[in-house]
Image (tube, rainbow, N blue to C red; front, side, top):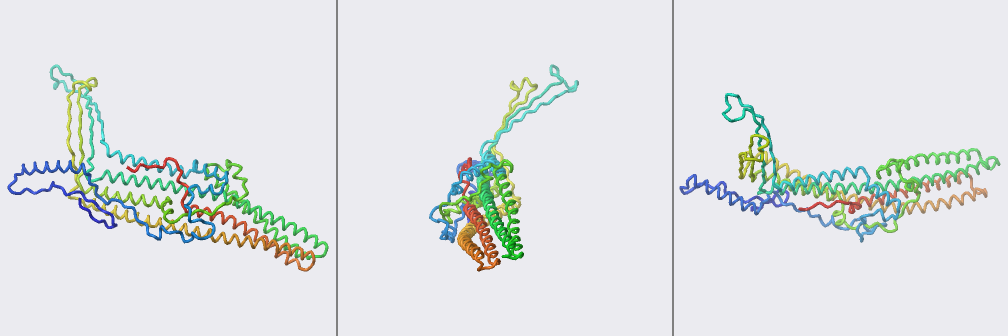
Length: 512
C-alpha cells in the first residue's frame, strides 16, 4: 500500500499496484501471457478481497488548541462555578415543578423537534441503505408471452397457439476491493450522526426557549404588579394633592403634574400586559398546545424562580464535547472526508460477482415442471478508463467540500467559545447592575418617605415630592426590568453551555 499526504494533512491510502498491465517479454506467447494475466488477476482478486484496500484519506478528528480547552475568561466572575461541569438538566436547578412539567411537554410535543426527529429517522434509513450494499443483491424476473403460430408453420402434433413463461433469479455481489462501499457507509454514518447532533441542537433551543418564555411571562407579570403599585401610590398622591389644593396649601399646577405622572405610569401597564400575553402564547406553542390549552399554573405564575447555587460552567474542553453544533460540524467533516474515498474509488475497476438461474416453459402449468434450465455465473468488471477527467473533477470537488467542512468545524468551535464568553460577561455584569439597582431603589424609597414627611411639615415644596416619587417609580421599574434581564442572562448562559439533550430517547447510532 502506498501512503500519500493529502492537501489537508490526512493520510491517503492508495491500493496496491495492479498486475493486469504486465508486459509480455522473453518470447512469451500471447496465449501464455493472457493465461498468466488471468492467474495474476485471480490472485489479486483473492488477495485484495482479504485485505480490502480502501482508497481515500482515513479520517482523523481535528485537534483543538490549548486555548480552546482552557478555562473560560469569565470563569472567575460572580454567579458561576468553573470547578463543576454544566448540569445536563439545568432547568431543574430552578426547583420549579411547573417549569419541569413544561419542559417535559416541550420535549414530547414540540413541532420543530418532531421535524428534527423525522429528519434523523430519514438519515438512519439512508445509513441502513448504505450498509445493505455489503449484502448480495437479488432480482427475480418473470414474464409471460402469448404466441400464435401461422397455420403453415405448425408442425404435426404441435399446438398453433400457446403461452410461454420465462422465470429467473439474478444474484450479484460487489467485491469492495477499493473501499467504495466502506467509504459510502462511513459517509452515511457521519451524515446520520450529524443529523442526530442537529436534533440535539433543536432540543437545546427548545428547552432554552421554553424556560425563557416561562420566565418572560412571570417577569412581565411582576413588572405589571410594580407598575400597578406605582400607579396606586401616585393615585394616593393625587388625592392628597387635590385636598391640599382645595385647602389652599398647594397650587393647581401641582395637581396637574402629579396627575400627568400617574397617567404616564398607567399607560405603561398595557404594553407589559401585551408582552405577558405574547410570552404565554409562545409558551403554549413551544409545548405543542394552542394558547387556550396552556395549563393554569403556567398562566398564573407570578414569582420568578431563583437559582439556589452558582451556575456550573466547566471549561472549554467540556464545552466543545457537549455543544451539539460543534459535534454536528465534526461529523459532517468526517462524512465529507469519506466521500473523497467514494469518489477516488471510481478511478479503479468495479468488480461484481454474479450468477443467474432460470427456466423457460410452455404454459403456466409447466413453470415448475420440466422446462429447460439455464444458469450462468462469473465476475463482471467495469472500469471508466482512460476517460477519468470527470472522476478527477469529482475528487477535487470532494476535497474542496472537505476543506469547507473543516472551516465550518473551526467556525463552530469559535462560535461556541464566543457565545459562552459573551453570556458569562453579560450575566456577571447584570448581577452587578441588579445589585446597584436594588440599592438605588432602597435609597429612593427612603428619599420619598423623608420628602413626603417634610412636605407635610412645610419644609419642602411639592416639586421635591414629585421628583422623589418620580425617582422611586423609575428605580422600581428599572429593578423589575433588571430581574427579567438577569433571568434571561441565566437562560442565555445555559443555552451557550449546550446542555439539555443528553437524555433524549433513541439516540444511539451504531458505529460499525
